[in-house]
Length: 286
Image (cartoon, rainbow, N blue to C red; front, side, top):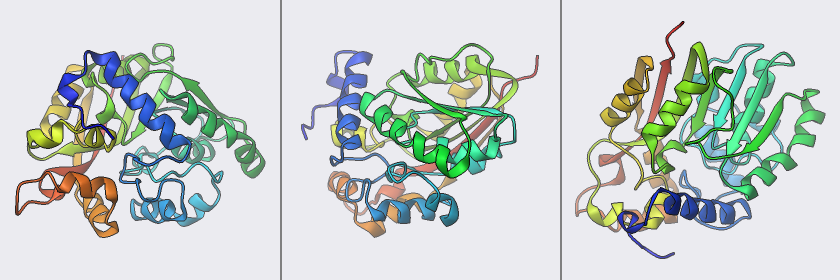
């Protein structure tokens, strides 16, 4: 893959086009998955990674076969503590993993909407709908094409926004947080798992498209995430680093992360710079 510098992209749309192309290839079984899935995207190993992130084996076993692509860096459906009857929005829903897990939690009275930038990912997720309906008896999940910077969702119609290792890919993260606040109902909440930085990355890594697609180059400092959430008007902000995820990628010797490690200063490891981060917050009540 070309190592064109992220800073050389002409504009925001150019970054989105790069992400769209990369994840379109991933949806079709290509290499280079976010979440360290270069070596196991869509394979049995994807489930092993997902289980390490706290997903229950019995829940994963009940998913449509194509849903778990190994793209996770946390478990936002558990973090969100979903309730029956809630409307849930998943930003960057990919193959539908978290949507299909959220559906039974909110039940027939609830609704789950997945939004994804990539038509190929959307097609993959939609292929799982018939299997989901047959397994659960529910028809409460849908997938929409759209950018998370401009969500195809009406104001104040969502109880819970979730996202799993996606916000780091956005070239306009403050706008994403503003969109989250816009679509949430008063007293609605957000539960995001993402990658974040403990300290700034070396320039050699920030310029790698591999690192952008691998959810590293686009990650921001933990405190920058807090500030963007606060400026969007969210309250009760809680940020919890989960360093074990990056250690798992080291153990699996993931090829994508191996290429990133090669660019690190001698004596340092990815976990010195990168962490999985759980971010939760609430939109103030009216």
